[in-house]
Length: 429
Image (tube, rainbow, N blue to C red):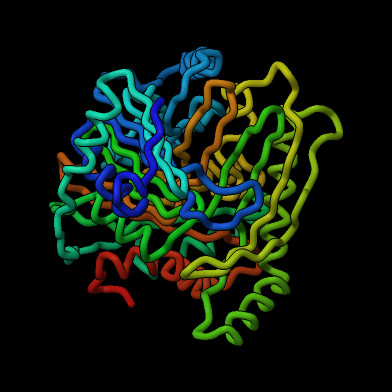
């Protein structure tokens, strides 16, 4: 590893990071994690850029957790993802809708080159060429000027169908099948020619979040502006921070304060949040020392550029024998994106949603050589298949017995606001 000071390079940290991203684009596998220096309990993502051209095999089939156990013990730095459909390897579940993006259920790679950014320096670790050579390649990379694209978006679920399905889901709640269900919809564009890195930059600028990320695996690309952490492990400390509860930002400080207070005291949003907190406590307890599961913060209100979110923080001490594979089997997928009880919710999700979630409501993150890891929740994200030119984004909300279907649909549009502003949507407000 070699460290370079931005002052010596006569370049700003942000300009260097942008050059590094466009330099990285030529690699088959790219993972960029960005916490955007946003203050957050237990911090956000570290600012990292990892690349590799080494072909790796996606984890699949019944051996996926055996493979995960092996990489947990590998003492290597690894970047990876888990798609929502990994649920089918954990529980007796199925996914029937067509996959248009192509991310595997699980995938990890060891970087050939890893850049670690701080406020004043960048550190380069490499197995491939000299650090100075990589540095010069980055410094001489040109950042292209790309104009925003006009996209012909389509909605896979009409508003009328959405409202009808919410009513059906509420009937399931009345019958006791579930207490809460996260119902999502997809907007998509076919034959879309876009520039993924430019889109990620625009999205991250419009909506900076503590768990932003760009993940490229051959033709499949994720551009993520997630505010939510799925799971972090520091030594034996496990941290989960589910989001349930959303309200728009105000036009000024006074309106902000009013809306923030409104969210904090909204009984429906608090009930949604509490249900998922209980679910996460139960999930973590399966990997935790007895009595170690704690709710460190309940109903915390966090402000982001587009919205306020209600976020709770649950921690636990993992038992010594637990590793990434076993912890994942106990906690995935995250309850904030399913509902409760989790298995019943996932069965109804497959019944009422008309799209395959894929990497949406899955996770991207990294595993350190000592076994520590950090993974987000893939929401507020664009996905793109550069080969088929299929572009997609998905949004959803938690449906409870108190939900007003029309308001839930408007919440979906609010959550998509940043993406709609980055890629104009001619058929939606």
